[in-house]
Structure formats: C-alpha cells, structure tokens
Image: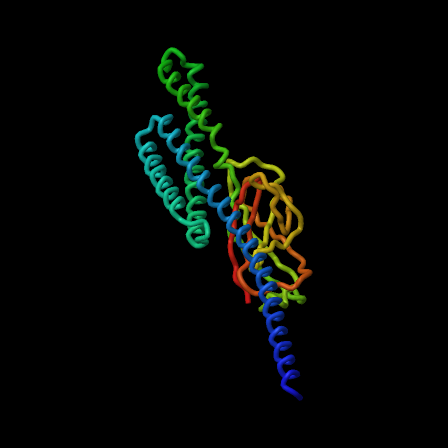
Length: 294
C-alpha cells in the first residue's frame, strides 16, 4: 500500500470521526432542550403553588384583622391577635423561601392547613355565640322593657357575625391528608421495583370541615414522574390554564372525614425515582406529597 493510499485512509477516518462527534453533539443538544423545557414547566407549577399559598396566608391575615375589629371580647381578641402575628410570620417565611425548596414549601403548606383549622375553630366559636344571641333576641321579645339595652348589644353582635360569615370562603376549602402512593404488581401486592408495577394506587383522606358545603365534589389526582411527565388521563382547569390529571373521582362530601382511593392502570414503563402526587378540588390544590421508589 503506497503513501497516497495511507494518507487518503487517514483523512477518511478523521472525517468519519468528526461526523460521528457532530451527530452526538446534535443528539445531546436536543435531549438537553427537552429536559430544560420539562424543568421550566415544573418550576412554573411550583411558582403557581407558592403564589396560591401566599394569597391564602394573606387572606387569613386579613380575616383575623377583621375579626379582631368586630368582636367585643378581650380574651378572644388577644388570642386572635396572637394567631394573626403567627400567620404574618409564616407568610414572611414563605415569601423568603424559594419555590423549588420542596421541603420548606411542604412544611409551610402543613402550617397553612393548621392556621386554616385554627381559624375555623374561632369561626365556630363566633357561630356558637351567634346562636346564643339569637336565643336572647327571642327572649327579649318577651321581656323587651327589662332587657332593651342588652337586646341592642346582641343585635349588633349578630350583625357583626353575619358580616364575618360572608368572608369565610377560605375556611371552607377542603384538605387532603394522609396521602399515600403504592405500586402494585400483577398479584396485587406491593411491588418492590417500579419496573414490576402494574397498578398505581393513590389513597388519601378528605379532612372533616363543617364549614364546607355538602354535596358532590370532583377530585383530580395528578401523578408526575421523575422526568416531570404526567401520567395523563385528561385535563382540568386550574389557575386559568389546563393541567393534566391522572385520575378523577366524584365523591359525595358531607362535612365529615372520608377516605378516597384511586387506581392508575400502568400501560407504560415506569422509571425509578421521585414521584409527586397532587390532589385538586374546587379549583384549589388541596394536598401534595412526594414519594421515592426503586
């Protein structure tokens, strides 16, 4: 083999190597672009979740302030003031935290549920006072001359309580607690690895809420895979946009705690890693939890 042939072969090998390297770079570029788009969507959803929590904290703070100005009870005012300050502190902590800090966001979401439940307890106290006052109004009809001044005070308090009742929408929001995600194999037993999973079972409780309206409620369960994709079963409206959900359940809610279970039939390969389950109802995210599987 002469020198020219050797040179030609060498040049051909170099050109082939350069072409192969270029192809690898193009493939990697496309993969990185897709990953960046998925990460951006996750970031946007996290920001929406954080913004909704901030709005909830702000509304709760306002409600505490309104109750303080409308209630003539020093002991109750002191308690409400303390809870308002605590709510403002949690709001500031939420504003300072990054939306991508999942652990801190989860903690503040639990704190939000606690603050909301405390507010409900005060609303029940005020409602109880209102019922007592209504009974006093009935008694005042029989003894108007003797209790005229007391009747006027009770009527004023009744009106104040009526105004408060118009501002308790946030207290009527449902809460999903005890969220679990269980991968099941073909024998309907818990799968040790996601590659053996045939059914994903999501279970949770809807907490007791006497301020919420009774009736049928549509619950949406959204499962996100480690890669950010959603196990899709359809779409629903949330914060002015259409989000994918995995499962939908319609339940009859009567104000008491109830258990809900939903199953996803697996028709694709599921990778190991971190899965996020989010529960939605009445246009609100009422619960979310992250799970890690092998």
